Figure (cartoon, rainbow, N blue to C red):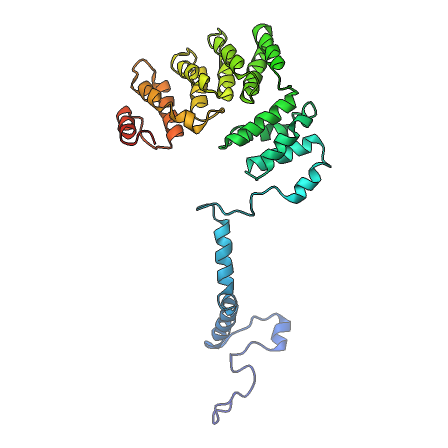
Length: 326
């Protein structure tokens, strides 16, 4: 270095010696001098870290937007309008009944506008042509548990089509004969199917009357499926028999199923379920019911009302008296 002028005598002296070519070739370690090597490293690191900030906040804004879509909390963020695509509708006729049913039921589950209408239009042409594949069974089960009764109704229509059941009073009569005299598996299938038919407007009074007569069958499994049939029939006439079964049936399994049919599953509407609250409050006070049944009473109350109250009859009475159950 020229000490008089303070100028660097060679290019390496400014940031310290980085090593000669012979050092590099010999594999000798580079020896930084003073703090200048650290200065170079700091400058390079700073340049790398500064890259995301160069675009005047654009990168940060983009990441913020992406992160909002990635989060699982907060309000739903639609990917697109929930409308059945014209493109899909145009191609439906070229698909076989199985593909049509599976696509439309999946869209109905996701509340796509027009999907249920398409099912209603096409379902009669599917009857006897659908296979109960695992995929279709899974879709039917999911739809039967949807929070929209229209989606549940669509599932019933597809299920009946897959079963090959004609929606006629004669079908109900044949099922009644099978439920009276068939083997247990045939009886169970008949009880379930006639409940579905009755819900779709096929001889609902006849279905209701017959199912109610079967509630005292000595076979627990039969009673279980009678309860299922009544729950999916979903008429006002089914409410009292389901309540009595929930209160009195000797089988915990049947009592639990009646509670589920009253509270959430099946085809009763929200308005129908709300009418049950006074009776369920009576059940909560009823010392003749065992602890497990009392637990199901409170679970049913919470499912119907969406109120998160404790298992305490006084708390539920106070809420009901102050709000009228709304």
